Amino acid sequence: MKSASACAKTILFGEHAVVYGEPAIAIPLIHTRTYVSIHPTGNEFRIISKSAHLNRRFEDLRRESGLYQLLLLIKKEFSLSSLPNAVMKISSNIPIASGLGSGAALSTAIIRAFAAFCGKQPGKDEINQMVYEIEKIYHGTPSGIDNTVIVYEQPLIFIKGSGFTPIEIDPGKLPLLVADSGIRSRTVDAVNDVRDHYDRNEPYIHQIGDLVKEAVHALDNSDLTEIGRIMNETQKLLQSIDVSCPELDELTSIALQNGAYGAKLTGAGRGGNFIVLCRDEQHSKKMRSIYEERRIHVIQ
Ligand code: PMV
Image (cartoon, rainbow, N blue to C red; front, side):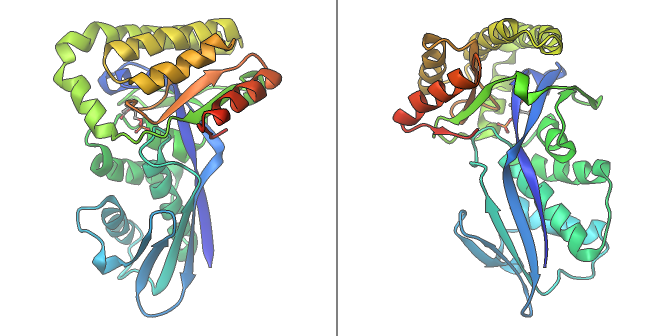
């Protein structure tokens, strides 16, 4: 049996604008992961995921699904004549369709598990390229930030088409809470709507990008007040391009009413997760219980 995993991610600054060439900052959520194991058995290749209620032979997957296409790609890239007689088990702590990169994490974990199973050692660049191909099936025109931060498992500044710059972020100095609004939303819909109204959105897109540049300095200096301010400004701009929703507006306002430095949605928006910059560990515990009282799942 061979197994592997991949982490979730959160976008701190620059979502949506990153699709148009602006920089964005993302960090891996190393404790929130998708796990994949491959067990040699039987005379077919079968995929089992309890959380996704999936128990299906490879041949029975929908041909256009990301999972089917990923397995075909692995077969080609790893020069396999056929998929092995095995059961591939998937389990995950990453909520789907909620801005934490569940699709990219699943693809990454599957590629890593196959590499271990087949004795291959693909480099991170190669894995990143494979995951990006499948992201296109899930999201249409992805910037590539999700696959990059997940495959490299490294905080980074990302610019579409020009790669990434690793950055140092000490999680101990950034008391960040990640929580799930519980509303599921498809990235592709939000991204398409922003594009459909690009003429109206363009000034806001550039302002989001400008804030990312300010955020790089604030993060460098661990200036929590400034990081929080930039989060709040970004949230307003994300509202202006219509990718927030009443629930996210309320959940981020609750953070500010309770003393947080800043709060914003993360990822494509219209639901999914939001992030809160707390004052310290103690405050983080307080915010956690405020959200949990409202039955909001705090991811970390
Ligand atoms: O919601 P997610 O995790 O798929 O984040 C997508 C981030 C966007 O900037 C909205 C789209 C992209 O491809 O960068």
